[in-house]
Image 1 (cartoon, helix red, strand yellow):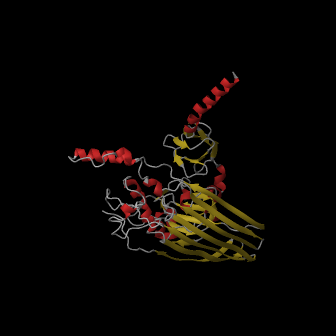
Image 2 (cartoon, rainbow, N blue to C red):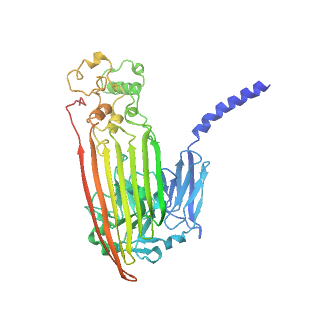
Image 3 (cartoon, rainbow, N blue to C red):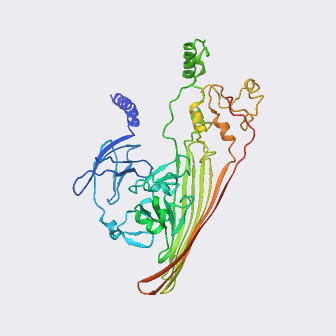
Length: 493
């Protein structure tokens, strides 16, 4: 009897387990309202904590989001409201009421010519503090602003590591440049944006959105202004802080494409419908064929960030120094798609006399990247080729009889480390090439940039309440690339 019960219990577990695994993804919906009067709140950002997955509520306050697994935390945020964190255990409806955050009215914001409390500022300003972005996993600072700045549209131009984001503060206002003006510690950064900055070094970011900013920065502020203030030292004992993470990335899904048997069957049907004969007599014997997506996708692409900061000071002098590194490999052909950034920052403030202060804010970065602009071109790129190449062509030709025939014996084909040629398809057009061969021809290509941005300032206070400050800022940047293109044969068409 006991054996029978045990056997039934094991069978029940075997039946239930597949359903449990299939139900890991949770479907959550709900409505977000204001706690004061119950009105629906549109534009609330709903984020899965620790990831870049986020949605916004619609005009009626409703949202829908897919949670990858139970135990994840949803973060509900909107400017002027207190954020809420809710742990999700099961699928279903989660309705949220947000309280007004009255403390934000006492925040001090940067407005271009000084600082003021938000409660007395009449211009259109959005402020993002360091606590809002320090826990986000981002390669570029611009993407950390997504969902935190109302009226600002931030769009990633590519999924490649280090690819820039497009920021529109006032929409498309001109047929020329719609990029906002960046000002870092009082220095206007005209070109290159703020990709050289480490998110851990940021004290606050203010976005000036109305026409009042033009009174400070002139016509350059026509498309909005983004003011970035980096961290400073504080009076007290020296502090040493390390902030870092390491993770892996994987593509969310692959396209369901034809295998070799299905492809050959359809080719036979097309040939018969066109009045021709059978091209492949036995399609079933071809099996699965080549899965080209597996040759370009990486399921464990690393992403990491490390930052070490040292700060401290006395009543007369404070300092902040940091060293940072960010690295990310792409999930598509990581051999030629990666981004690495090194940062050094030195900020200090010295009070020589009661009426005299001086200091500097200095940052340096070195960026080296591969493939951020070329890996996913319309024709011939590895991702488009992996989707369009036929599964009948082998990724690598290991049969010597085939390798000794044209085009492998007559053309400068690309070969792997063992001397075997990469397969060349004769069934596709539009310059679709073997992704493995494409990668090998670009292994040594990379781009680099150096950025030095900083300022020195002096301030005197001849009488109490009157401060005169002079600032000298500059940006020095140089960049280049290294590439080599040999003679090679990639496509038969």
